Image 1 (cartoon, rainbow, N blue to C red):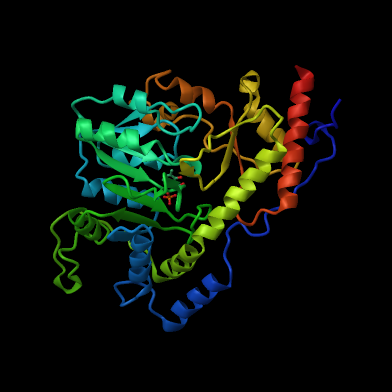
Image 2 (image 1 turned 30 degrees about the horizontal axis):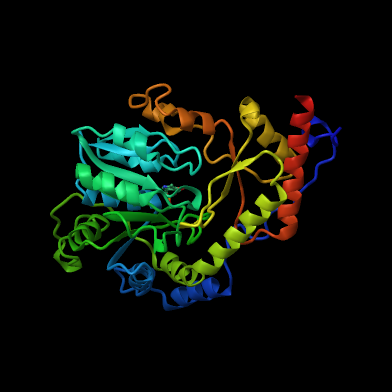
Length: 391
Ligand SMILES: Cc1ncc(COP(=O)(O)O)c(C=O)c1O
C-alpha cells in the first residue's frame, strides 16, 4: 500500500519552488548596471557588448564568426535565409523537438520532412533520415536534444554523400561535446537560444555560429534589414532582411553567463546524476549518456515503462499535485501538430509517437538543491508505486 496521493485527496509532499529560475548573480547585475549607467543600449548606438559577446562566443567554440539575434528562432531563420532555403526545398527535421526547429522552414515556404528518433538518444535516427532523402532534399537540421549531442559523424557522412547542408540546432546544448568537440562546430551553421530556461540565458536572445565567411556576411546583413556591407550611413539594402538585433543589456548578461557556462553545465549534469541515482530501481528509462559525449542536461528526460503508456498525463498531473515541477517536453511529435498537418502522415515516425506518450522531464537548473531533488524523487516514486499497486 502507498500513501494516499495528493491528487486523490492525500497530503502533498510539497517541494519548495526553485530558489532562482535562472542562475543570475552579481556579475550579471553589475554588467547590466554598467550598460544602463553608460546609456548606450544598442550596438548601432556605438555599444560594445554585442560585439564582445559575438567575439567571445566564437572564440569559445574556436570558430571565426558569431552573429547575435533576438531569439533562437530568429537565429534559425537567419541561418536558413543565409543558406538560401526556399520554396520547394525539403528539409529533414527530427520529429521530437521544439516547434521552431521546423516552423522556420514554413517561413521560407520550404517543406519540413519529419524524421523518426532513436529510441535511446531521443535524437534524430540516422537510418530513417537517409531513407527520407529525395532529389529535393537540401538540408538536415539536427537538434542536440535536452543537451545530448547527436551521432554527428554518421550525419556528416550522409550529408557529404547526398550534398546536403547541416544546420545544428544547439538551443538546448550550449557547451555540449561530441568526442571532445563542441556541438555547433560540426555543421555548416549552428544556432543557439538564450531563452530563460537555457543552459546560457539572457532572457531572450540567440546566436548564429559559422566558420564560413560568406554565410557570416549574409547573416550580418539579414539581421540588419538587408543592409549592404554593414554601412549604416549608406541606408542601402540588397536583400530582404529583418530587425533581429540583440540589445546591449542582453549581450552584457550573455558575456557573464558565458564565463560560467562550464560550471553551470557541470551543476546540471551533477543534478541529473543525483536524480538518476535515487530513481535507479524504479523502472524509469533515462535518456542515453555515454563516454563519447559531454551531455549538458538542459533537462533530464525519462520514459515511463511501456505498460504505463496511456497514463503519462495523469502521472505528471499526480506528481505535480504533490508539489513537484516535472513537465513534458514535448508531449506529442511535431508531425501530429495541426500546424504541420499537410506534411505529416499518420504513424510516419513510430518511435517518436510512442516515446512522446511516455516521456517527462526533471529540472536540472543550477538553482536546484539536493533537498529539491530528494523530494521530487519521493513524489515521483509515490505516484509510480500507486500505479504499480493498481496493476
Ligand atoms: C530545440 C529548440 N530549437 C529552437 C528553439 C527556439 O529558441 P527561442 O525560444 O529562443 O526562439 C528552442 C527554444 O525553446 C529549442 O528548444
